[in-house]
Image 1 (cartoon, rainbow, N blue to C red):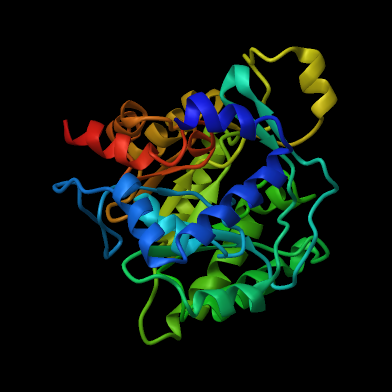
Image 2: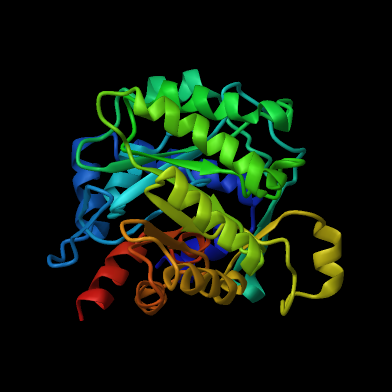
Amino acid sequence: MYKALLRPIFFLFSPEKIHYLSMDLLALLCSFSLTRALVQGLFSVKKKGLEKKVFGLEFKHPVGLAAGFDKDARYLHALSCLGFSHVEVGTVTPLAQDGNEQPRLFRLPADKALINRMGFNNRGLDSMVERLKNRPEGLIVGGNIGKNKVTPNDEAFKDYVKCFEALYPYVDYFVINVSSPNTPGLRELQEKEPLKRIIHAVMEASSKKPTQHPILLKIAPDLNNSQLDDILDIARTEKLSGIICTNTTISRAGLKTSSGEIESIGNGGLSGAPVSQRSNEVLAYLAARIPQGLALIGVGGVFNAADVQCKLSSGADLVQVYTGFIYEGPSMMRQISNGLSS
């Protein structure tokens, strides 16, 4: 029903506006016990034997929702009804910020893709903390953290530490995001020395806690092998728990959408099916060289169980979806779990 009826209607409207409208409606449905039970009955994952233990956490199955979908932890109760094994909230920054000017989210249906230049729009740490105090039981929640646009790169580590300190009591793991192409200068923080400074600062803050949450790094698909080797060296030295590969790409190679339309859209990160191959290449490269005990989460171009299995076979311990969920709809997790079980 989603692909035949709802998606064509949704795609008539602004991607950003329909996102919030549809999620607000789902949240409303899931706020009542009867309709919540109906949603869970239709979409929750019931298959057994898919459990995975990764960086000390018990996941019901390997597939979760990537950061960016629920930027402010507004929809965790609703998303918990759709069968995700985990949901990553954010990217959150210490201070609320509006992000880039609209329109900033674009569909490419011919490519089963999205282009976004959201710019870390979010309501800030204080707002997220208040929402996470009422997080749903049984759902693993990750906190994806970033820096404010106005924070200079040489002080970026302070923003990441602020986010870590505020979210520590309320999330199960952390992701350091330095790979979004939509905040000016952010990807410069993937260079070895700036990245070491950020990770070291967060790890030092973590060492002072009574228990240590897993800390991961999210990287871009546009890094070359030398840069990936640097990432591995830092991950090994700083004893990170894992790497998420990958974020969106700035590449526009091989798209079916006309060059004129792509040019009219302008800058932004490309996600969805066109990212799949490069994401898997990065994943496989890291998997062949990764230190023992370091987990990999595969993201990029996941639409079905075959895509999930491809990432697992390439070395991923867990998999996350985002754009595929927009195109496939709320039954996605149940269909993937059925496919993995068979």
